[in-house]
Image (cartoon, rainbow, N blue to C red; front, side, top):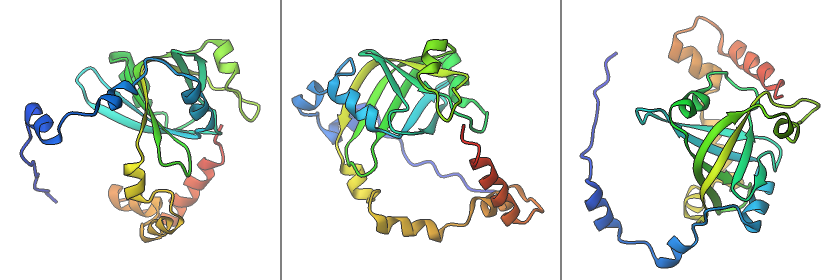
Length: 209
């Protein structure tokens, strides 16, 4: 099957700013170049973040990261460390950071509408003292991503309010979706019962660390 490609008209940068207007002064003033006590507390309560990276050509990737609240460690006011827990082993983030050290993080706290954004540069480390601080379930990660903070600021809750992300009624939408096994079986044309794929996925989830 061929799919027609749709490419709407791009808006020039100058026109984007003209349409959006300028941000208020206090919006710019809230951007810090470090992690203060308030943001340190936010990170200590956050069990989930999204991590954006890009390769040398600018091809972007955004991946989810999660663990117990406080799984990201604040090493000092300018440095964070994120444990690398077992995943799909594609290692997109590590590949991108090897070519382009820019990184963007978005921290979330369940039930809280506001989020925390952190931008900067990053690199992998196997420093024993850092990894030891991230030990969980009697195991510690093999690698961690060190983030050198350039910007940190709170983001308003409009997006989470509009999405009703924390509204329990919104979880009913998941019931309208096919299972991951059903999706993979159709996408790859596999002659494997979707229930078998779902069972394999559940088995994989049992080995979080």
